[in-house]
Length: 218
Image 1 (tube, helix red, strand yellow):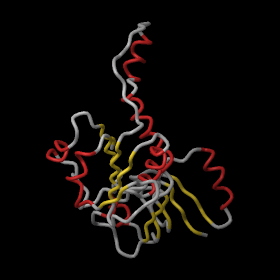
Image 2 (tube, helix red, strand yellow; image 1 turned 45 degrees about the vertical axis):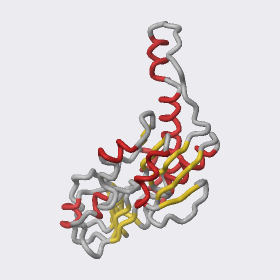
Image 3 (tube, helix red, strand yellow; image 1 turned 30 degrees about the vertical axis):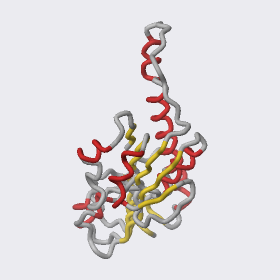
Image 4 (cartoon, rainbow, N blue to C red; image 1 turned 135 degrees about the vertical axis):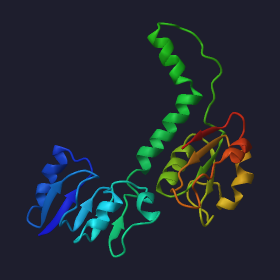
């Protein structure tokens, strides 16, 4: 029997589904601060110090796409780790589209007017159609965003490590081209993993390169 500790939030529905594995796994539940004890597998994001204290741990399955809490140093050798990349693309893409529409169509102002029973034009609005979107990071999240933006008629420019052509992108470049690309973009969307190379990449100087009416979505 494999001892599995789940430190991620776990609903009753999920716990019920875990019953399917009761013949091969023993499940226990905790949080990020919990001692790992004798568990061989952890599902969640336990603190690094807890992982270092664990004697039997072999595998950590994260529920996040970003693994920078572990990859920045201190993670013990010999323990395998997997992130949840690929699970969030459609959800985050919908968030990005929603955020753009919210700003472009002045939804917050109209909601406040509606609450106050005011019928008033909030001013000029913008459309997504015809805009140039610069997507920083063209993995699962970035490509899902570009796919949905394409339906609105945008020109999509992608930035990734290789700069190789990718589906849903009209142009592709590497990070070294970011300074030349920022002034072209109406929409700048950050989807890069948090690494030494990408941390603080949009600093003050680069924000100043953007159009005065550009929209940045992180």
